[in-house]
Image 1 (cartoon, protein in one colour):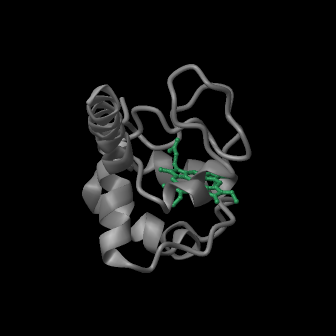
Image 2: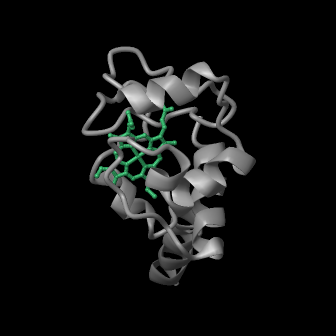
Amino acid sequence: MLLRSLAVAALVAATPAFAADPPQLAQCKVCHNFAKGQPNKIGPNLNGVVGRKAGAVAGFNYSAAFKAKAAGGLVWNAATLDPWLTAPAKYIPGTKMAYAGLKDPAQRKAVIAYLTANK
Ligand code: HEC
């Protein structure tokens, strides 16, 4: 009885974490940290990136191509993240985000939902 309720409690506790963390995020984590205060890696820390101006992480050395695009007023939201994550090198030619892109629309949606909630 006790074991059963423990198992249920564990399941309930585990569910939100799973829902908030899409499997494709593992690819991003090679280069990005997502929690507040963690250092930049190969890419900038992505905590709170949605709703923010592109290229705004202090101490991160963005590529010239990325800085030029950011200076044009790029703000990250679902509409701008979708093409960026589909094909970074197409959206910002010359970017140093060496990532081929996430081609599956449902997977992109899940990653963008995660980024939006990750404040
Ligand atoms: C191989 C390393 C690498 C991988 C994998 C990678 N990124 Fe990046 N990312 C970078 C780099 C480097 C930059 C900075 C680009 C520049 O300066 O041209 C960047 C920039 C970004 C930015 C813009 C941040 C800002 O401050 O404006 C977002 C958003 C982003 N990445 C999201 C993702 C997501 C989501 C994934 C996974 C689907 C991912 N990245 C996978 C290296 C990577």
